Image (cartoon, rainbow, N blue to C red; front, side, top):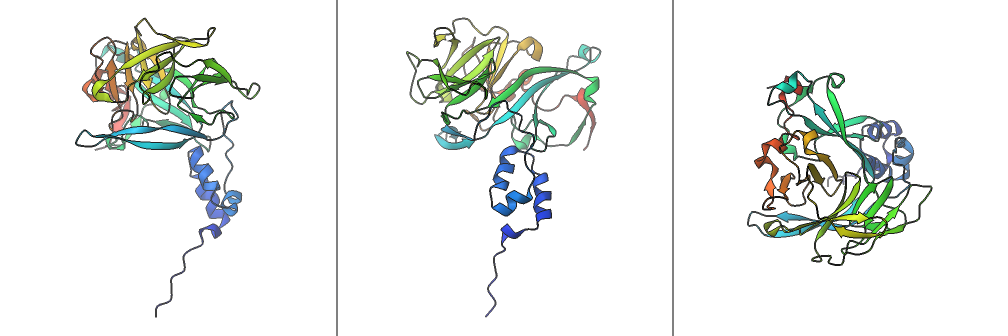
Length: 332
């Protein structure tokens, strides 16, 4: 009879090996998970010395789900359990003045974040599915390019009093959080002011119970985007925060030159003129809120239909592929 195979005891891995593995982990949440396996893994791995949030907050519990669509156009949902704290900045890389003369030299929008090891990382993976990355490339020296900060300090943040939330945004140095389906919103400051305060009462007409609500800052105002989550009959309502009255009021004017980028992980806005796109007054959805392809767009001054962003190359080109002028060499 063959001897029974013994299962390896992963908790007894060599300290040196565990330390090397932990140094290769680039995201904070993965490092937390790695260190949580057992006491040996925790004591042998590196600590995260690069926690860059000004807020002292734990992991957060997220009460919502992602809509999925199968081939038969039957919609279902996948529950989301936990998210974690992270900080991102978005930059727009533009060609030089000489290169701008050429019509096809459009800018490139990138996300910059800091890894758990303190390294600066440039990413497009949050915007596009991995299928989009079909070739490697080398990027030109950033010191020779025009780089514009589009949105800084985009956080996913909870507070210590209310771990369950529906959407979060940092506005004027404070966390604003929609805590229920009615749009009721609270705010909490950094460590020196940890007490949660009411920021906005529930909406008078909060819409259907399954509506999704997103917070985004635009031109110094905090906006609430209320969306019917079924894309076949899309309904979008915009509200702005009246800080003095502590309530959401209907956003009567259009967005004019502004483009809202809305997602479950982060949201921000930018001007169409800075982005070099034809016009603003539109919303670009940057993850799987509606589409498995992640990126989709709705123009608020037209039929408000949801379109795949790839159908609008003048907007899609912001994300992928990298513009030809920025690629130093392309491998085939």
